[in-house]
Image (tube, rainbow, N blue to C red; front, side, top):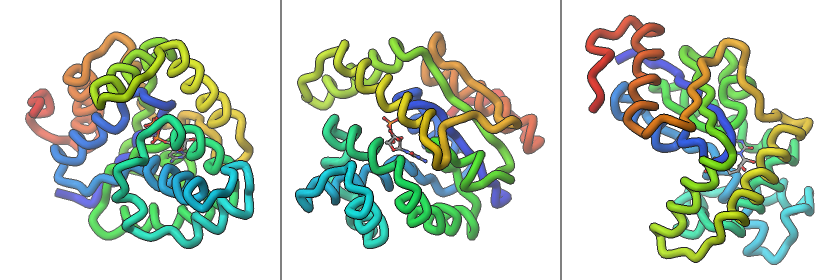
Amino acid sequence: MAKWIVAIDGPAAAGKGTLARRMAAHLDLPYLDTGLLYRAVGRRVLNAGDSPADKAAAERAAQTLRPEDMERTDLRVPEVDAAASTVADVSGVRAALLDFQRRFGTELGAVLDGRDIGTVIFPNADLKLFVTASPGERARRRWLELKGRGLNADLAEVERDIRARDARDIARAASPLIAAPDAIEIDTTHLDADSAFARALQAAATRFNLANSDQVN
Ligand code: CDP
């Protein structure tokens, strides 16, 4: 397989991770969940007793990030959702994480998901997907996911948090969330995971001239 770069961007809980993981397996490419980098920075700031709004503390945490920080099992909890979203607004944090993301994709190609992959990290990506869904549907999915992991969550609160993170992602000056002009949009509001994957495969097949594009596995 070629060293393709596949950029998958979109708002919180739109199903990017599931889609990106399946695309990576199908195309035999490494996968990087870039949200985990921001989550790991947020976690480090919280654990150091600092405020995620403290820009200097956030920058320090990003500059000294270690691989094991991404292996933690407490990165996908609401407290870290908010901290990651806040530190992601700091341009020094984004700058500190940029090289790692570029290097990850350079040797073997990669599927990366995040907010600014197709616009800032890999503006020349071979394939760009922008995955969205309505805020209500995204909240419902995240709520189900939290419940499935045994975490107690209130649906209205989950939707409020998602809307707040969307607003911060869209409004920030440093690498705001926006679809690249050449991204293919997949709205998954009324699509299940298999149908979203089939759409993405179709886009990849067209772009990369792949055979058997309709095979979902
Ligand atoms: O899984 P979910 O969609 O809830 O979030 P995530 O992808 O794990 O990202 C966590 C936070 O990091 C988001 O709220 C974004 O603010 C930020 N982020 C970012 O700014 N840029 C990226 N490339 C990835 C995540």
